[in-house]
Length: 290
Image (tube, rainbow, N blue to C red; front, top):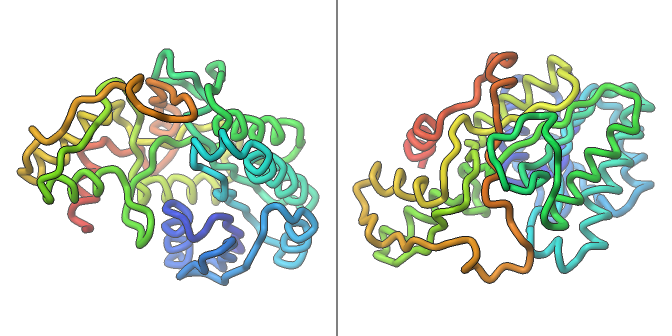
């Protein structure tokens, strides 16, 4: 099968491309600056709408997994126009072209489309993003709703894994505690941390099986940042007294974050062969990979 993956040099994208290549699929790895290590590299500027159309026309993929996005939450707040171009307009152009070519399209979205007042959100719960990042990703979802074609919106939450450039939260905790540094960790922000190999397999299954609609593909555990840091420190016998309890209101962020953006993954658990993993399973696998 022929796949086109955007954002293929990123934390999740590199895992997806690697896994697809191992399954002997033909993979076109779209990137902006950094050339991906797997697949057939295709340089693609997501602000160039004509280039997007041309790329899809030339490659004629059977499936598209759209991971590329401006994900820096504070940067999205200060550069709204660029965020809109990358997260909304590019998504719309790719989706329209995919529909024209009868290509199944998977759009990877975020838990930040919710306001975080109450967690464990289901697929059809009311969205209400707090910041522009969440708003732009939601606008991308809305763009898909207007296109009568085969698509899936796959929302995830705080992905972590091994990447040569991007340092995941558990690794950041490990390195700081090993260096005997005090680490401020939030006690009142809850998410559903997702191990990238687990996420990748779920995304690939959705794409190959052409599962349509919305689905939450995240870790199976709702956990605070503090409890996740404690889990890492306990597992590695590090000094958890260095974890400094911090509240979300104390953070000097430009953009507001949801306090509880955990996702209900019961649909994914029910219909996918690759099940969402608990945080205990994921951390065990992650630490054994380091």
